[in-house]
Image 1: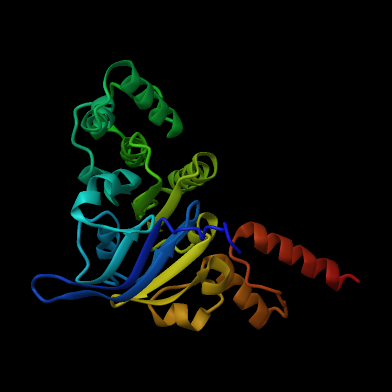
Image 2: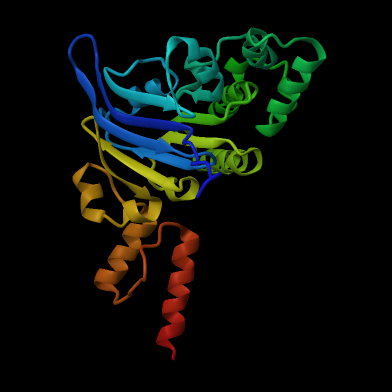
Length: 287
């Protein structure tokens, strides 16, 4: 129909290879798309190519073959500055990202590079700290904070740049259970309330159903399966074949089906889903 405009993915990779200068092949024939507002998880064992993939998103690495496009435009030198503002990267270890004497200085660094100063810069710093729940931390040293607080400061420094996409490497890595729950809630709030797209790599498969709508599974530099979270974790043999496991709730349901006589319409992936299905099983057994 005339007048209709086809939506453009924020990130799209088409037939992408990447070979390091020493000849090591890291990525082969990667096809991937990330739409506005999506929450996308990238899973895979160590050495699968996840970190290399993420460095392609904002032009830190150029593809050896294929196309990396941001909002429909292939990344090229003239587009790099705009791309790096749209795609915010948060590292696995916040100590690799933090370098300033105070939290305020940490957040102001990127803003100064954007030409912000004075009252406007102070407003953005205050906003970013409020979003991550660290409003009273402006004058603290980031190096004296807990691991979870450091992650929040690193996140605030990226959020201050007003990115359209947050790319996070192991966002729950090295956090205790409470810290993990808090960062998951924070990232979901950022996605929901600010409309920022999330792309993250993780080994913590239990967190994936809580914060992803779409999953890509990588192994040996290739994408071996992709789809909705439910679709991907329903392929149990394939997940295990690539040195991953099911979320623990899904594994429990699998055992209950095998040994307990339960039958579930779909594999539950979260405690809430499992509770609902178990209650339905109990209600059905009483009829």
